[in-house]
Image (cartoon, rainbow, N blue to C red; front, side):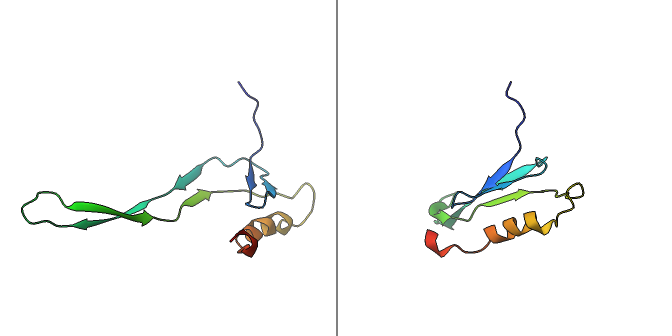
Length: 90
């Protein structure tokens, strides 16, 4: 059985954001869009795939810098920066 490991998030540019505590839950979801056309005389509609939707990830992270005394924003700013649009990736 492998040893427990500390979780981390990795950005598209390869930067790692270490988690102080592993999240107890992680949820990832993705959906697709379908269009239905009703056809007279049929008991089910004809479905056409119209594309994929954006995916989402949800987790709860806890930050505790009490022992070190550093500002918690040292860690939370890294997460906020990950939400910025990186034009070099387009």
